[in-house]
Length: 145
Image (tube, rainbow, N blue to C red; front, side):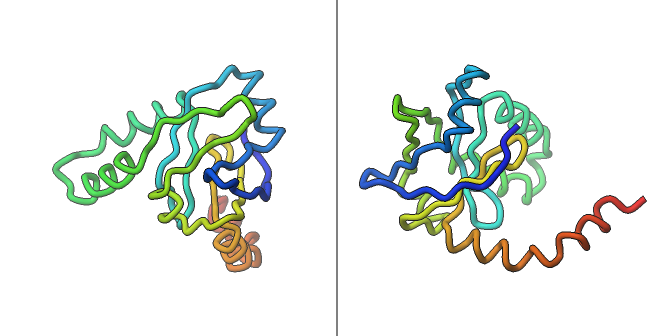
């Protein structure tokens, strides 16, 4: 549903503009409510309500008696903020999430199927450089028959 990568800059109020292709999709899907939280690999996850609820149900079904489940759920849900897109297509990032993702001014907005990832440009560049050469190797490992 969400695809591509886009470079944007935070304004003085720590807002970025959602890419035009994403804004159009949001309008056609009539999606208003979404959540931003700590993601994996140093990025943030932006997840619209339907995908959020699906993931929330999966995470709630994990055994709370397992320390790893409790710890992950605490970090994931305590970092979450419910948000919306303003009339100009901007989304604000809370300071604690900016710090987590080490976002200064430039952000990469990356569509990853059912979620949008928000990266600091520097972290995205490093991730991409570290992984682009292994792309085919990963495909072989993941889709091995």
